[in-house]
Length: 219
Image (cartoon, rainbow, N blue to C red):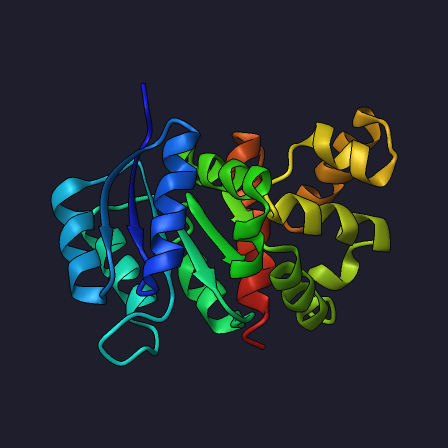
């Protein structure tokens, strides 16, 4: 069964490109809109499996896309949203993750041109996970490592946390860092312990680990 997606992008060529790219990977594009009000209406009425949203939309081109997505998630808790942005905006990333329910992504628009990476991110978010751009994570992590309990993490654990926040599985992390999967499992267990995340579903703890250091970035 195809995943249903709503796209919000004001630039016609990029919006049309996203439509064709996702359709080519078996997504069903149920709406492609160009403004914040249109996006909010489509998300609440259609309740897609995932939304792909540009942060800056008409009429003011500030953060209408983000605000429409947040409003839709308040109306439809847990609605999966993947936000696209031209630049790293730490505040936007924190706002998206603030409710702790997961199913959130934040990618720089440059990633759209890597079809495999982009489609993988859309699917991860639709499945309830996170897909954070490496540049976003690097900036957020750099600004939060001075805060406890994040300061207790070892350099290797911070590397694992960064990749975890991108939405990578333990297997993918092991390949990236040239570690065994069991070693990655030990590092993630240590991260959860140092962040005081009680035993529960590992996917939930991964989201909570991301939230912990994003929230710490406010300090």
